[in-house]
Amino acid sequence: MELKQLHKDDNDIIVGFAESRVGGRSENQDSYGAMQTSRGYLVTVCDGMGGGPGGKTASSIAVNEILTGISEGADDETVVNVIIKAVRRANMAIIEAGNENPELKGMGSTATVLLISENSAHVAHVGDSRIYQFRGKKKVFRTDDHSMVFDLVKQKVITEEQARLSAQSNVITRALGMRPDIEVEVHELPFKKGDRFLLCSDGIHGTMPEREFIKMATKSGSSLGAITDDIATYVDNLGRSGGGDHDNLTLAVVETKVDSKLKASKSTSIKGIIIALVIICILAVLLFFLSK
Image (cartoon, rainbow, N blue to C red; front, side, top):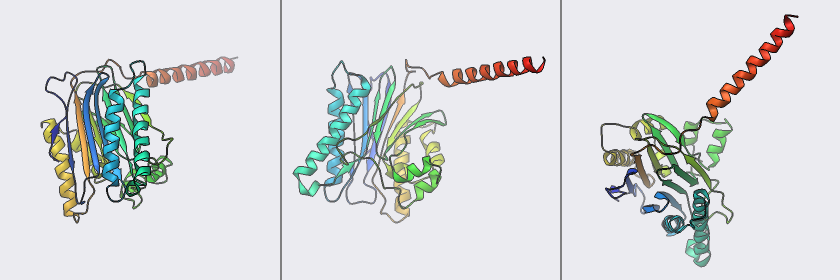
């Protein structure tokens, strides 16, 4: 699938591009979608899994149900609730389709969602597809994979690079279609003008050390479309040079044109000040008693 611009030229908040390639597989089981909604601009990337037609069907259902669920969300619902309900709607649609068709039984999909407005960015995910937020040359946010190896990373048993290279790196602990009561992880994030949000399947982020990936994603001096295409081309060529049986690869990159109304939390700095004041008070009390 060729590079695609995600938005209309008159969008005041973002500029964005997406690209999806089959890689070394016979079928592309990744899907993505984007649309303007009353709550902001919506982008979703999903990576399907399952034998036969299952993977592509699952990711297509996920994208369609997420887009529909969020665009039709009730006005009196919070953004977080609308996103969670849309992802759970996609989850149940995949389960029901699998129950109705034996060929699709057991199919599933990851899901990543970005809903961005002038107020803030909401991100949600299930599985090991990722969402990054970059500012300048730095990563300021990244989702945590719902996978067996990433659980070990969080427990400090292995490093992230060991997890990436592990033979068990594709064993995920959470996916749409896995069970009815799926848990959806959601975050609300502030952003600054020029920040980049990148949604991608593991066919992208699993191919290189993260420091190399960040360097490519934060490149300056090129158009956002060129950067998106360069990442896809690099990953595809890397796979072909390694034998040509590499995974499907999909990414969507969105760059902001304005600062969000939501500002970065000051809670961390305030907490530090409070701790410092407490320490000063304790030292003052100790000095008082020692001077007696």
